[in-house]
Length: 187
Length: 121
Picture: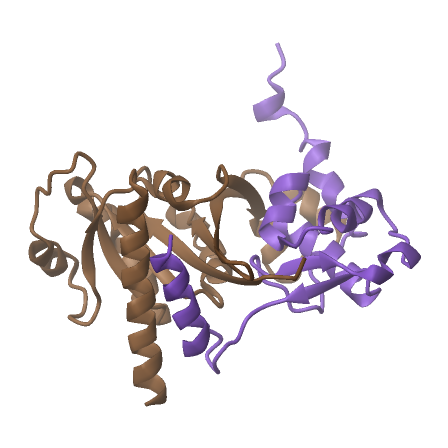
């Protein structure tokens, strides 16, 4: 068995916006959970004593899924930890990523502000995906774009985190956007 | 009544993973959470120093990402990275990532393959 090439995307957005559902809809396997902690990723802590005293309450869990795209290509889909205090983990998640899908609940638009801000500031390719939970869109995508103040080149799409085809389409939109950004840089 | 969750000393389970790494929290080997790890044919002659390292080699008979190793063996990501880093140095496992451009993101050729794969789902 050859060693497949891994690629990843990140699913960001506020708490309980449907990130884990999104991951589960596209994943070949039941989503897995991995843990990291702030002590381990911060600099200068390398002895057990400090680790033991500073680690409480800083463990963060992340759900992720795996999608076989071909015999030798695997896509990992990582859900970001929701709370702001876990942003230390986002740098690790977006490093080398194709980009991010920022999942939006139009009833709680402000919940995705930190994710949009983060992706803009770090230059990570991203699309805004409006999660139409009940299949009904309460706000027009243009209104969401305006409310979020995202640049015109950033795609705003409608998805449904419960359905594989809709999730797939929002990831396709992200990959196309990442390709356009890569082309703009090199061409 | 004693409430161990709130008032007790830090649970030893939270500390023990770092005894596997002898307290180290980082490795010189470049590893990301999606880096694919595969056991090498040489692994049999490279005995693991701790049981968890042996478990990683065993698990990676089928290629697994760092994140999957962490999930399956219930070990923090950084602990997995340190242990895998050691295994890479001793050539018990090999790593694999794709084609990347200067900014560290996947290159166009790789993105095109991802697009093809998604559209065939």
